[in-house]
Amino acid sequence: MSIRRHPGDLFAARKKRKVPFEFVFDELAGVDLWTRQMFGCTAIYVQGKIVLILRDKGRKDRDDGVWIATTKDHHASLRRAFPNLRSIGVLGVGQTGWQVLPVEAEDFEESVRLACALVRAGDSRIGKVPKPKAPKSKPPNSKKRAEKRATKTRAQTQARRSRRD
Image 1 (cartoon, rainbow, N blue to C red):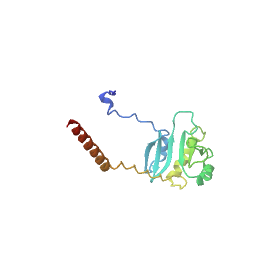
Image 2 (tube, helix red, strand yellow):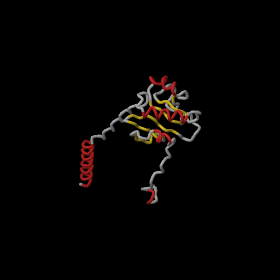
Image 3 (cartoon, one colour):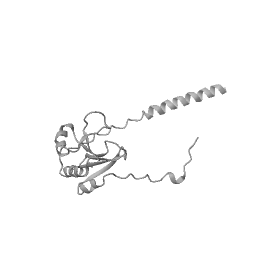
Image 4 (cartoon, rainbow, N blue to C red):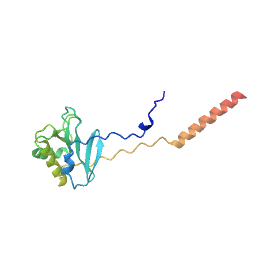
């Protein structure tokens, strides 16, 4: 069974997702940054480090807001600056390196602006160098596979010839 597609569907442009909390980019103006879509969120990188993730899934989710990339060593000092900062729930129970400034907090925008100021200032508490991607596994040795296929084909051909004779 084949699926028929309209010829125009093949090259149809993907629907662009709206980037949540666009004011973050205004706050980071002048910073050499790049973004990447990640798990339905927008990740922000500065100087090779992931620093923030903007997440707004539109559900009543405790993890919507601005995620800050940090380490457990910096949680206490960051919580003094951001009283509503907490660990992210979707990553499991307990503390993780990721902390969230929740969108439902009364001081959300003010806190995010402060976080952006820390990123602009190069605060060492914010940002993680992403783990390198695992190398793609090598395909099975194609030479061996081709030899195996050729041997099998020769054997089949010989078997057919012997049946004819």
